[in-house]
Amino acid sequence: MKTQGIPYSNVKAKALMNNDVLEAYSVEKTEVEVQILPIKTKNTQKRTFTRSSS
Image (cartoon, rainbow, N blue to C red; front, side, top):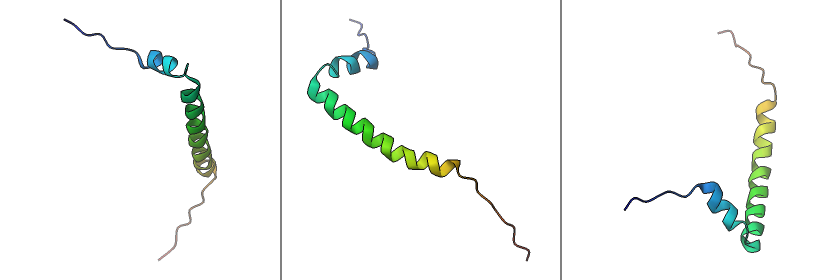
C-alpha cells in the first residue's frame, strides 16, 4: 500500500481552526517578529571601516 503525504499548508489550516491554537500561534509569531526587527535595523545601518597605517 502506497502512502501519500499531507501538505503542511493543509495541516496548518486545520490546526488554526482551533481558537486555542490560533491564539498561541499569534503570540509566537508576534514574538518572533519583535526579535527580527532589531536585526533588520542593525543590518541596514552603514558601517565605516578605517584602515590603520602600520
